[in-house]
Length: 364
Ligand code: 5AD
Image (tube, rainbow, N blue to C red):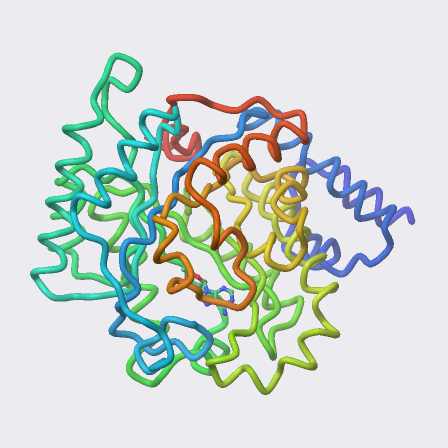
């Protein structure tokens, strides 16, 4: 027990400490880690929760990630791309409802037309959402995959200022198992640097509970976030999608689910303890595993939540994993639901604020 308290009360943890924290099993110790992570969050970024309305504007994808429900070889889903007006409407709704920021996410495309369309919609959103309560318009985060430096720059110049690109796992061997040979770990890594070079605040993250992943891998993931100097972290449980090769793990997965959920929360706490002043999202995938998952993420040290804004009629076509919650709801339902969920944790909610990563601001 002494070892536990020694580690818990350290100001700065080593990666061995983090591995130890991830290995905790008993509820009392986990609760104490949670309380500590919450305290570190309060001291470094405050208790406020920031909203990013998530618009999944297209599920067309040129990639074939073996775990993902919208990979190009999944022929069972209907492909869609929202038109400009639909995206703009969703963004305006976010601005009118005090979100402060949105995330534009889609499957990956690398053609010029796609990049130009995204750049043009960013420009329009920025112009249309400037108001006295949002003097710089909505904050825009992008999540559209691996691109060239030139294209990252184009998207940054259009007005987006944060970018999410998960490394998925920092273990190159494991990365290889999850992706076809042409999607390399080296390329993903290079893109993370390009995202930063283009000027974006960098968000990255991993999936937790990938078959073959162990606690050392996860502790190394936390170290990786520090070494790449990430400003934002988005992590969630790996969840089997039945149209993927991982459907053969479905039974095994059911048995591991509880442990994966617990590990996901401990990863949020670990990221908070180790990185301190980054933004950390409590992701939807947590709620897919457990109805109160997103609230729990907030209690373990996350300070960002991403309510779904995608128009209801396409939501069911954007399922990266099975059991995605909220697919039959409207944006306003998600708003009410999220606000109540955050209130249940007694946290203040930021209205009309970008909520940029303090880590990024301090670096500058
Ligand atoms: N389970 C959990 N997360 C997934 N993602 C994709 N497929 C799955 C899955 N089956 C995550 C990846 C990707 C992000 C957009 O969604 O981490 O980077």
